[in-house]
Amino acid sequence: MFKRIFSAVALIAFSLMVFAPVLRAAEANLPVDVQEIFTSKKQVYGDTFSYPTGNAEMRLYKVDVEAGATIPLHSHPAPLIGHIQEGQLTLKTKQGKSQTFRVGDSFLLAADTPPHTMANAGKTPAVMWVSVASAEGIPTLTNVE
Image (cartoon, rainbow, N blue to C red; front, side, top):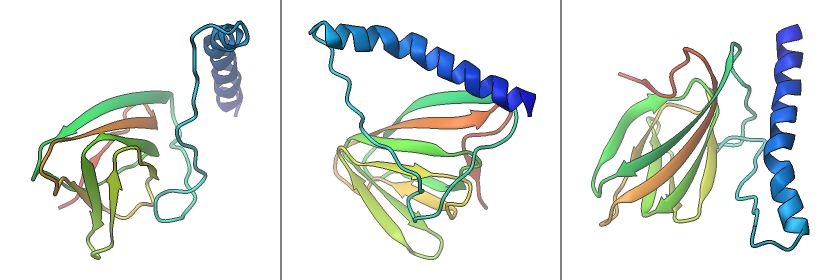
């Protein structure tokens, strides 16, 4: 319990240290523009999510997916936010449920999201940014056979 409280306090302190200069720059009319791109309390199919236990670890990935390529069936043991910078990607579950994300779309996936593929059915490459709120030793992606 103490570790969680300490982690929360450390996160808040770190956030204040990082964003305080940005906020002061914005107040001083400097050329700084901070925009919230996406926030969600529920994952892509509407369920809530939780964080894994352990030593907290944040991750950021740039995922390039060539036209016609598919990321094989997988799941995510920790919550992540995805954002499509270029192209489009379609998430499809084993049950056939699918959702296509296009340029500017963001989404949240978590451990309760059904196993799925991500495919680029477009004619151009897709670029997806992924930020993961995980813990040491927990994989970002787990392949499903």
